[in-house]
Image (spheres, rainbow, N blue to C red):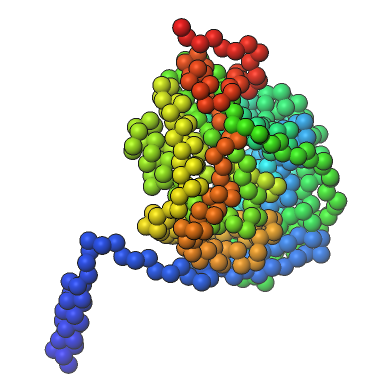
Length: 478
């Protein structure tokens, strides 16, 4: 019997070796079809107070992540830009039952992670830890969300940190360029606003408490739970912790229209002494609920998606202008923008901008080669499937479906839609969503050196590092 089993094993091994020898390892294997449904199923419940709860039961890790999404963010800052962000950062700095030190100690004792932040459209709060501590995690989480006290001394400390960060940002060309880009694309709309020493300095404790009262309410929130849990067990804990949270009426806000640009223009932030230029070529983009966004991601990846993107291949590999270049669509609830960016030597600032525009023209006018397109399709689909391993990412995506009004099967079909983009479809999307004229070109660098060459492209407006227009044009070097 032993000899017979050994013979079978050896025979099987010989067969495997023989089969392996027939594989041509000089050729890249063909990618398999993306799975039809790759996004996990989830349970949805709504509490009487309006809080929507999404529960994803996953046994991959003995952990649990809770993520609350409030449907209010920087859009509601008013003239005190930075208010939503400060409110979020102070949620764990003291509650009605725990001071700041006690809260942090309890989180640390559990080996948990707590975080909160705000963006243009929303405020998110999350906590994660071992599932065996689930009741305690829910209790801490609800305490921070519903019962923060915003101590004045903690606000003072946080404002000092923000002020310090704002001062540092003036020395960071990429940050200056991004801020000016947003202001130019979105105008006086809150999407174009950014915090300054003045707006942050004007924020008082009453502003923070008032923002929390006006915007943190269950009927303006969703709660996603992802982990090795049972829906019934989680819901019992959530109902106990969040059931008494009072609903309310959210404040209204009047928002201006986004501006339009009828010609290509250059906006130059003068940064004396810079030996290189930070360049952003920007235009309006798409909102997050755009039907075409998954397929459009393939087009953008071809244009500026890392090492294999055309911008990188052109600006670095072909012309040696830079160490890197890329592009992205930044979609939000009410709108979005497209930007292509790089950092280059001063003497090639104008040629670099020209090459970016040339690549925009090329992808609009010429179909993408199938081999090049296939590489980008497979890359994006693979990255998406790998991202499903992250509980935090899964929680956010479950909430995105509701928040942005995406179709229920959006993520279930995402990989299939990405891998289904053809050269013809890619060209259609490029012509629809990418432009090669009426561009907003933002450059941060030494105005004396680069302004004359930029004027060959389009009219130039000069700004200082406070992003205020300079009254007198900067004289060119003789």
